Length: 169
Ligand SMILES: Cc1cc2nc3c(=O)[nH]c(=O)nc-3n(C[C@H](O)[C@H](O)[C@H](O)COP(=O)(O)O)c2cc1C
Image 1 (tube, helix red, strand yellow):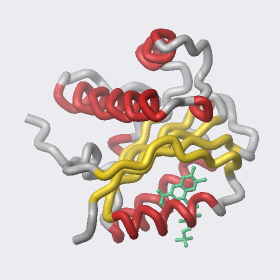
Image 2 (tube, rainbow, N blue to C red):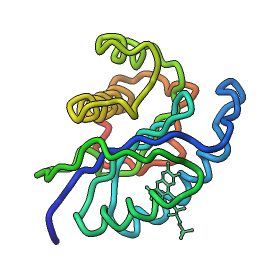
Image 3 (cartoon, protein in one colour):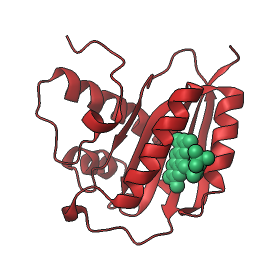
Image 4 (cartoon, protein in one colour):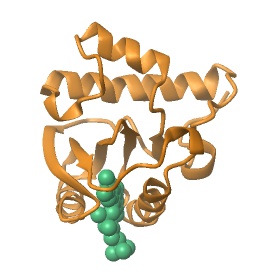
């Protein structure tokens, strides 16, 4: 097993997203299904968030595998302006599974952004520190979802799309 890395990038969707009120964006759902299949085979984990027409994704795994996966993703015509925000060697994974949030206007994310002076989700402008902070925010959110006994939000796809990696207590 080579070096463990976490790569975080943002991009802009090149399709016109369906309104959030109509449920899961179909293009995003397709991307997620492909990702789950490929990533679980390659032992790549992470989180994919889609909001306001932008993607924000973290990929964790072996350096070579993450690089190869990211090259494939970068060439995908369903998004553009693919921008690497952070690439780090890490000792442990935050996301041993594959999960996704689809929460276009979730209050706590708005608050997270507001504290950093953003009025909208503009991840292409994120600094490395902001990108890492958002990854940790998603990680913490997930624990809250799993352990807090909160009922899954209407946009939560965890039940559909992620393997649980931690005991739910
Ligand atoms: C925003 C975005 C995120 C994606 N994330 C992944 C991913 O994590 N893993 C993956 O294998 N493919 C991902 N894809 C899809 C790839 O670009 C590519 O279409 C796919 O890997 C091809 O898989 P296939 O050869 O099995 O058809 C993503 C695409 C987009 C637009």
